[in-house]
Amino acid sequence: MPLRLEIKRKLAERSERVKSVDLHPTEPWILASLYSGTVCIWNYQSQIMAKSFEVTELPGS
Image 1: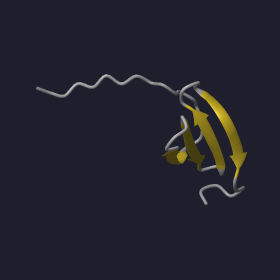
Image 2 (image 1 turned 90 degrees about the vertical axis):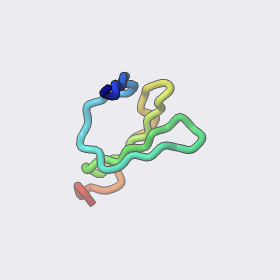
Image 3 (image 1 turned 120 degrees about the vertical axis):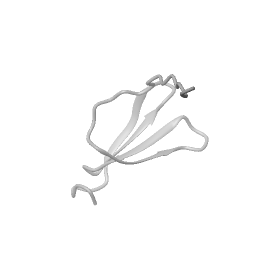
Image 4 (image 1 turned 180 degrees about the vertical axis):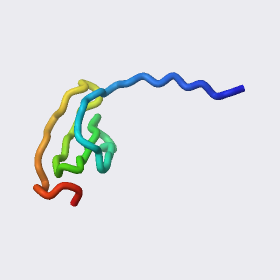
């Protein structure tokens, strides 16, 4: 019998390619770094972006 998984999207946002993702150990935050050099912090409970900032102007570094 094949395994059936029901996947529900919690956060859906169009963006550039994601380079890495990390979860905060105690806060409801997801940190995503993009290839463009932007870092975004998302609150997955409220489903809004808490903060966004540039760490570099060189893509992919």
